[in-house]
Image (cartoon, rainbow, N blue to C red; front, side, top):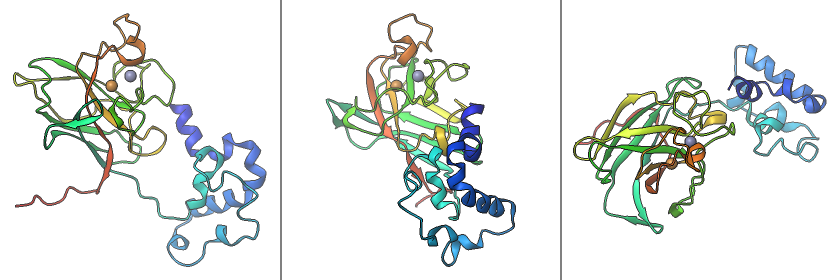
Length: 254
Ligand SMILES: [Cu+2]
Ligand SMILES: [Zn+2]
């Protein structure tokens, strides 16, 4: 974790090869970071955009990889962390959504950009079975082309084995099990389930998929062939894409 964070935040230190090219850019950034004002970001042309050599010479500058400096192109833009997101879970069968409106909603809140994500969930009407433990995770891909089946494996940017949400060795996407009540519904109230999860940066779950399974997650301890990858959690029952919400909950409608 610490290593990843360091890489994300200190491009200049971990990217020696690019230092020559980026020297000017870095010094400007630091000036801005340590200075008082981001004024240039909102008004008028930005220094970085006016240089004649901007563009062709530095592949990656405009691209997506943060390690290549891709994010630097927008450095002068105001930075607004994502604070809230949710996933509406739907039951899929053979790639098709089943049933009517979903009563299964998971909401993620991250008040501080690098702080913990608290999870609130109301999981009703999925038929999870009464008084059961049901595995659930954030899977890596936001692709529901073939229903929950195309969402990939557990979100695991550090390449670790599957585990419990409190294990040192685990996936960022590991949420363990949800406990259902006598009606087969589950309610989670503002709980920090996995403190590696984020709505921002390297461990961001935005655009990925929450899946609830028909079986119990063995938390990597079951000794089955898929215990260390998916916790032997069984078939994928319901899923939904994690989407960005406004910072504040809207006023309740009448
Ligand atoms: Cu899963
Ligand atoms: Zn996992």
